[in-house]
Length: 424
Image (cartoon, rainbow, N blue to C red):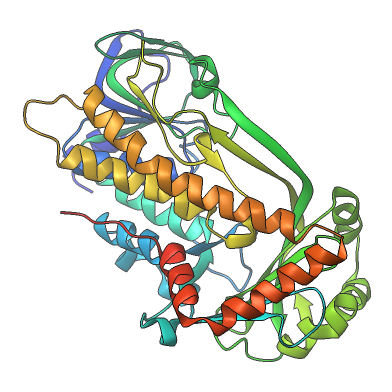
């Protein structure tokens, strides 16, 4: 790396007494925050990213062991990563294309089944499955060579927003003055809370148990999902080299029991699901990671930009919305936030500042519809398949079969899942 690049990629001293200036500050170090920071810098905006532990490089996955955080990447995410010049730099041997999805109802009837096919939809694939650290490592590498991006290992202690921008006071003692703040600081977003942006939040009283498995049968590039009696949902997502990633949404009590299982215990559990349907599809399963669990909830911010009195802030990712994983769209929704924001700022009129209220309202307006629709659909599906009455059971399973017979409806479902973003 050249001396110039070394200078620009070095970390900002957290204890510097001077007030630094930046066009945009991104608060948060997850995938959405890192992607947004890189994209803003590529637009020529002087960007600072602030998050704890940014100095701890995310290591590239190299072994046969796979990370616990596995995501489904939609074509809209692929398009954004390609725009950021990240997609081709990924290790594609650790990405698995999904060309079919098979979703099963909870009555065990063959007719209660929905099949979504990339071939029928006229698209090369429905999604890709990959590890979080695969994306994060590549984003970190790209950030090192971006002269307009400075990364700071710190946290925001206080934010002051006025008519011209925002001042951030950091826990390490530094101060940054910026035109615009991007809150990518997670579901509990301190920035969102400090600004008094209300949220609607609902616990699903469920936890997602995640684990990776070797399977003896080929998965045929297919993602499987079973709705089970009682409200559990089990998804098996394909990974390279005859592996699958499991996401089992269940009660916190059952999640705690699942985490204690040994090999024979897991075998018994799989045999009990839909008359052994998982084992019939995938063969013998051998654990290839330590199972983990996390709670499930729905969160939606009342607005995606700061209050009218101080709107120099935009929310992205989990700071704006959190959804049930049954549709596998949480990360994709957050990265569509990033794509829309970059597109709006990249096409802004020459007379508009980066924090112009018109631009921020354009962002909020464009993201509200997509977010509301996806949160509503996943929430209603979750609740429909949690219902225990005979009428609800008949309705949900009949609905799967009906949709499976309609090419038009399936096409619309696939279009919604693929997402749609444009870069000019």
